[in-house]
Length: 184
Image (tube, rainbow, N blue to C red):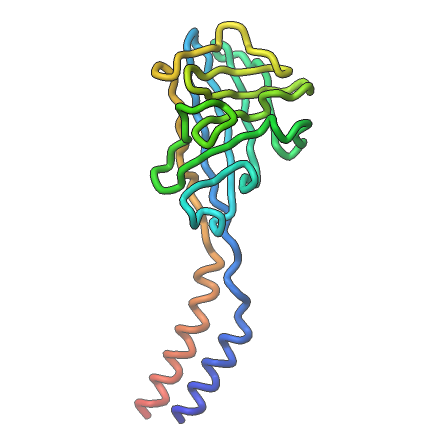
């Protein structure tokens, strides 16, 4: 009987698909001087978070919209592509859940999201002195904000993982059947 249960459980493990990668998402909020703000979202594969840092090569999605006193000054969606790869530098610490800032915009402690593009789209830069919005590769007048006065935050989005329950339930059922048979 024990051999049968062990074989049944082993067969079950072969049939259950390997764990799917989980996409982790965050909401972005930025506030600068003169009532400039920016909101957006980004996501990455949880497997890429193992080293504690998400960089530009690991970002799956990024959207943002900039505002001047609540009026949109432009949008950007990574799904539409980036004209110049040098126009995208992204550094996010998954452990502390903060964007790395304080270095030059192209460094490992800076941000440069669509910052040198020639297309008509929003960009964002966080360098060692200030943060600002860009449109069509040029600074949005009045959005330049001293680094110490700006806020750039990320808030984790709620994740619904129904696949986890679907994977675990059959295993629990198998164990319950084995236990019930043992009682007889």
